[in-house]
Image (tube, rainbow, N blue to C red):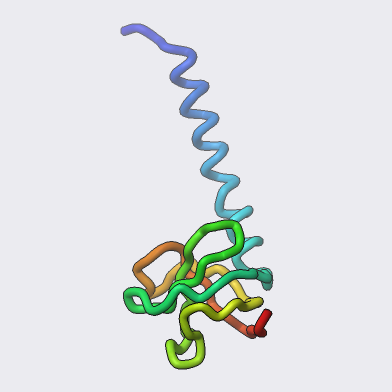
Length: 99
């Protein structure tokens, strides 16, 4: 049986990275975040929002009647780990204002 030291090091590095990921993700997902962008319209089933960085995300709990296509908004809220939104990352809006 042949030993591959690089394989052991690679697996070890991957395990270390995976162990650190939940800590970093947990901190960023619980903090309030501010996003700027434009409402793209209704998705499946959540309102779609294009952030200024270009990423399209889903807005959990945002009413299509209140968040209409073309509106430019400043959003405050949190990234969600679990959501019924089926397109892109989900963001729970705590408050919003027009730009």
